[in-house]
Amino acid sequence: MNGKVSVIGGGAWGTAVALLLADKGLAVSLWAYEAELCDDINLKRENTLFLPGVSLSPNITATNNLKEGVSGASTVILASPSHVLRGVVERIKEHIDPQVNIVCLTKGIELDTLKLPSQILDDILPADISRRSAYLSGPTFAKEVARKLPTAATIASKDEDAAHKMQHLFNTDYFRTYRHSDVLGVELGGALKNVIAIGAGISDGMGNGHNALSSLITRGLAEMIRFGTALGADPVTFTGLSGMGDLVLTCTGDLSRNRTVGMRLGKGETLDNIIGEMKMVAEGVKTTKSAMALSKKYDVELPIIGTIYSILYDGQSPKEAIRQLMRRGLKEEF
Image 1 (cartoon, rainbow, N blue to C red):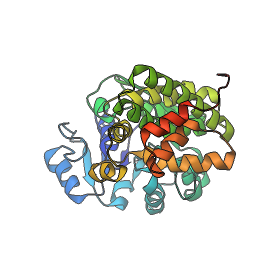
Image 2 (cartoon, rainbow, N blue to C red):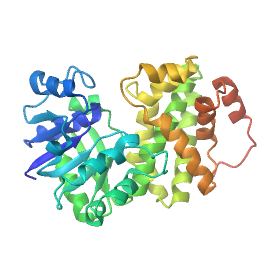
Image 3 (cartoon, one colour):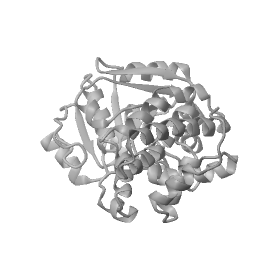
């Protein structure tokens, strides 16, 4: 694919994706909010704030001007946190080409509207653009992709041609992509696994051991499937890269921001203190709140996510919250 590619979001993941595409010989415009960061990228060839130590291709040009970033781009990649995605898309919609391809990397559920990224794009963009938009998800730590370590991910779109096109755009010798048509399931997997990862971190932070972690991941996946099915997703989607794959990575990998939040909570720190010290967004904190609101709307039982909510927002101690979770009424596994 020829033409300019625009990546909106200069965090670690946006930068890693920009590097992946730039290494394929594409001209990549990387928009970042921080003007100083843009200067570092352009002059030092390094994202000193979010991806330090990684040398960036000269094919990447950073800008903090959104219009400049997306104008003339054949593909626009959205790498913004979920709570600012709507505002970013509103700002770029007047400046994108009518034939543009959109790829969204955002994982989360908008708190005010309880909408997923695809539904936000449906609200704002022309129908033909939003329909052919694609959604990239899966077990993809930015630092490992930037180091060109073997990785696999899912590209989902309602438009089969768009899915094929974006699959080939992202595929490299070290980054393998699979197509999918279940956009809803892929997005829900990417959002809900962050919440379960907070719980995994809490458990590990408390020293609960491998039995507890394995059980939490397994039953967390069951909640994701139950929730997704209630919302209309294909339950099989959650057994793939964007479900189980991303869940295992985020619950066990030390690079996981959500697991890190949970670890610190499990060791007795307060949420306010943890969030105040973090440079990057842990999406699971906000997604816990929106997931609980959605579960009430669809009358879906989410005991693990509910327990994490009680720790994050009701001030319940992790020890007492886990005790109550374990003492729930007994039932069949399936």
